[in-house]
Image 1 (cartoon, one colour):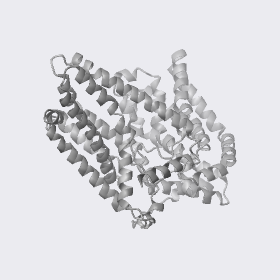
Image 2 (spheres, rainbow, N blue to C red):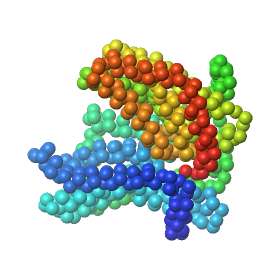
Image 3 (cartoon, rainbow, N blue to C red):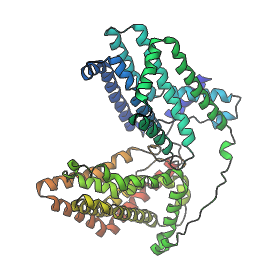
Image 4 (tube, rainbow, N blue to C red):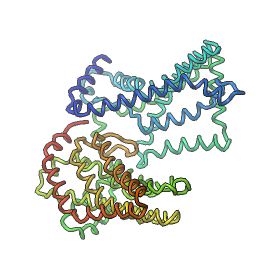
Amino acid sequence: MIKHFLNLEWKQYFRSSYWQKNMVINIFMVLFALYFVAIFIGLGIGLLYLLKEGFPDQDPFVVANNYLFYWIIADLLMRFFLQKLPVMSVKPLLTLPIKRATVVNYVLGKSALSFFNFLPLFAIIPFSFMLVSDGYETSLVLTWMFTMIISVLIINFLNFIIEAFSAESEISFLPIIVIIGVLFGLNYFEILPMTSLIGSAFLAIAHHPILILIPIIILGLCYGFNFKILKKKLYLDSSLKSKVAEVNTSDLSWTERFGDIAPFMKLDLKLIWRNKRTKSMVFLLFIGVLYGLFFYPQPVYREMTFMFALIGIFSTGFFLINFGQFIPAWDSGYYKLLMSQNIKYEQYLRSKFILMVISVVILFVLGIPYVYFGYKILIAHFAAAIYNIGINTHVILWGGSYNRKKINLDKKAAFNYQGTGAVQWLIGIPLMIVPMGLFGLVNWLVGFAAAIALLMVLGVAGIVFHKKLMKFITKKYINSKYKMIDAFSQDN
């Protein structure tokens, strides 16, 4: 049966309409993976020498085990945001005489073959060989190595348990942040020395191989818990059950002042507030408001005036970037219906434009207290806001005409790459790198005032030529209309 499952997934992948379209991204991801593999191999080979040099009076094997706590929390945090449980189209299988346990075991077994599980091995195995070559007992090192492999699998299944419990939360990343924060805090304030406890546990298992049964039992419990969770959800009618929820109506009458684009604005605002991915994205706006606090409190960054443009554009344009890059994919679920109505495409796009402009103004106003760190910062944020309104709004709308991937609005927003294509990666060049480069170059050649003036002139020019730019962008969307309808009808 497993062979049949693999055969079905192989055919599904290579027969997908997106296989050839995503070839460039797939090649890029392979090169990216090889880059990390090379780094981890180098780390595994050189770690023993680094520990001997950094801790000449201590046993490097003991020191390495004491740092395993930080590796565990970093691995768990990275997996939560980047690793997803492997999916499989199971609905057609549920009508066939196939045991649900077989399907669940296949999905969980497939997760064990994740790149996230193999990557640590490229450091663990070379490091183990280096320990043996340095004179450590082979049996001790092998026991430790197998314990580490089991720990990697435990983290793998523990991540899915945490995701399962946080999936229903509006801020779905909060549980993992709380767990990691509490563990780190207990260790930092020496309330519960996690570094020495975990290090001692791994050393005890390495010296007493019988204790390896403990992590094996923990692995079995994590696997069984995941099995139980998935099996409960594996019913044909589970997706047919409708959620009973209280509908909170909001007064959106203020949108009427925008005239004929008001219905589209209402539709966007309702979409943003009623769906998990867009709603959690709104909560992430706090990152945009507080982004400057990562830099401005430090004197070294306040001297780097060329950074002000980048921080200002990102801070005032956080909603613009995160919301705008997926236009019109937000409406992909009903895009075909929307395009069958007697509406003007320019009104549809203008409603998105107005929402992004409003967000830029709000984020700039909320960022006014940054003047505490210097008046130049406030001036740079103002120029960045003008640039965002005049240039980046049009750039992001133009880039949206190349979107060809459907978005699932029920998924969380944090580090969710579903619906992301090459457009989302490339659009960052004109959005962030170009204005930062122009600002930095003029600031270096002429001065800060001239760099600010350049951003403002470009932004004002974009505002002045707004109607002409919108006509050009609208024409591009109309030309791509049927391609987007066909693409949004596909399952990514």
